Image (spheres, one colour):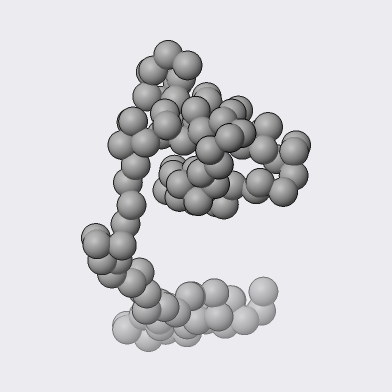
Length: 109
């Protein structure tokens, strides 16, 4: 408090006001922005409505197993692999795919 009073007295004695020191400890330095890598459009796979429906139908087809196709479609939609090793995961992921077809694509299942 004594420091503030001394500064006020000095500023009253002198015609030029004394500038207060600015806090530099709380200012954040600007970090450079990192841009994402450019994705080539040739490598991107976007499944059609028919591909999505076919992948869902192939989940129940035990004779003709198209796991690679199902995984490709599921990965394009949800950005994760279809887990064929776990029965619980298969049920949950199949339900997620069915809900996507019903709610987003508005197609009857």
